[in-house]
Image (cartoon, rainbow, N blue to C red; front, side, top):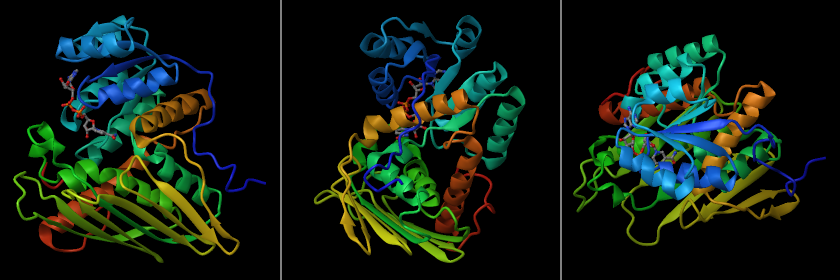
Length: 353
Ligand SMILES: NC(=O)c1ccc[n+]([C@@H]2O[C@H](COP(=O)([O-])OP(=O)(O)OC[C@H]3O[C@@H](n4cnc5c(N)ncnc54)[C@H](O)[C@@H]3O)[C@@H](O)[C@H]2O)c1
């Protein structure tokens, strides 16, 4: 019988080590490559419209990799089986489409798409081409979130009915980057990880209404509002998300998930350093967690995709499932814009794209 001590959230071991390509060698790509190298994965091609960015990453992580500046050359000239697409969402749709049409499996960075209908079209295309389309929700493989998912899936919390997450951190590093121009930087680009994980924590509940607020904070110079709250009403469950993106001192990150058999709490000063406690009638258990969201989470998503390909099953990070997380996100943003509660699924496009 599985106990809290033996729980694992890591994808099943796979001997499948196909040639992989990465398109988009910007800020986040080094974390992908660091994780893939640590897992002995085979990255054989790197592509960026800025050649020097691809060359720099190749030199650091995979010196043998071929360099491309045009993804069409990459797809026609290399034997890659899996493509990791790590550009921003606007540039991604055409890239993903081309990869799927060339019958390559795809791992897309998040947020997956700006329009749910486009997402469904890409998922249908992947089905027709017989390949997997997945989304890099690496938060699912952050050790604390991964452990909580596994505990919930194995039934240790019983039926879960509440999830409350509060993140108090400093996101002002985006100053001067393209992220500064994203109006709903917090609720869209950042919070998508939480809209995704909250569904994992309340797997039996259906979201019925979403209410959200955003505010600027005194002294902020960045355009996007740096404070946001979300309340999610489910049938027989509730969730709240709190984001304080300009916490200069005493940063903190806390998650509480309540079930009828146990309560789980994860807390720490940031996403990388978290301690989990599961309390039930027998007492409190604190698992020893190894790894960190950055970069181990990226190993988790790629290994999950490879394992799913090898086993011929749908990956846990399947893009069609991800559209449900995006539906919560879009509804929250529309709620913040209008001051009115929204039904998930009623808002098809990122309201301020
Ligand atoms: N999962 C996570 O934890 C996480 C963390 C940070 C960023 N992200 C996401 O990753 C994505 C990229 O973020 P970033 O910070 O790396 O951005 P970035 O702007 O630093 O990098 C994007 C790169 O894509 C390249 N590019 C654009 N169009 C291209 C094309 N047609 N062909 C080849 N290359 C192309 C650009 O030249 C650039 O180098 C965003 O969607 C962001 O939200 C995810």
